[in-house]
Image (tube, rainbow, N blue to C red; front, side, top):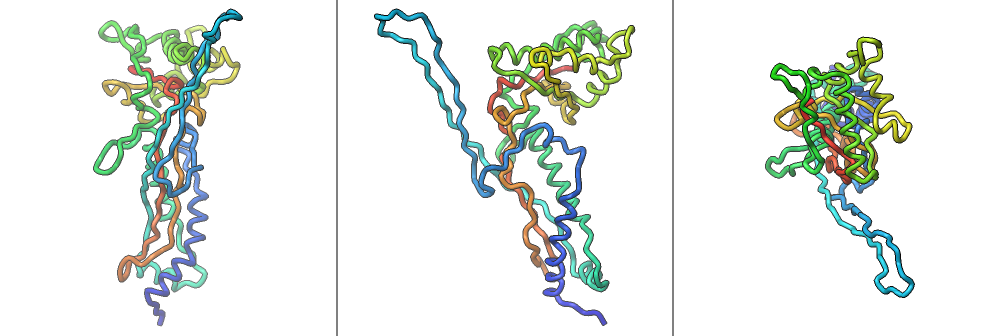
Length: 320
């Protein structure tokens, strides 16, 4: 007759955990968006309470100078210090004595990694939301914004000249291909000109429906080239740099704009401009016995959310 006690069950679970974790972390999640949209910074100490960074801005203009003059023009550097808090979150999985006992009855049987995989999936979805939309203030949770809703980023409606039902419209479905392309380039040019040509967006994020629309709509009746294909070749960033503009669809942009309208986001994907603080990526801790028949494998992670360091390298276009 097969018998076991809680200590045997815990020992069996511990022996299985490394196999389970290795299998679970190998799983890829193609619909998780944030790793491709925001540079992830895990350089801070995993247990740091905050991350401190400095932002600098140069000042000073050269001018003509007489050799007997005393008021020489001077350059200076303005240095501002910022502190970004780090918070902890958790997701793990567990087993009961019954489940472990049944697994132990069959020699050589490994526990499934399904539950660990589900925990990691939940972690990735959580981080996706933190990176894109931030964390609303609630209780002790600090209110954070994300990549698509930072109040320090310049936002405005696109041109209201589409042939909508009431005459005018900002929506792309009501606009000509030329007007749509103009909306995108106006957003890109706005970043370039207002920063005195210092900043230039290399990434454009669009709601899923809007990207689908321009990916299937011809540029004109005389060509099979779509608006998207034409835009990839004819945009401000590519014209100035000769490099391709990254264009991606992102969930959540459908209602991210003012008045819950569709929003597009243009920015430079660079850690000097924006980063996601993740000093402790998800990790599983040692299994422990929580009750007479319950065994847990805790999982924790620590993040500071998204930090947009140079808002002038961002711009939002609403109403598309």
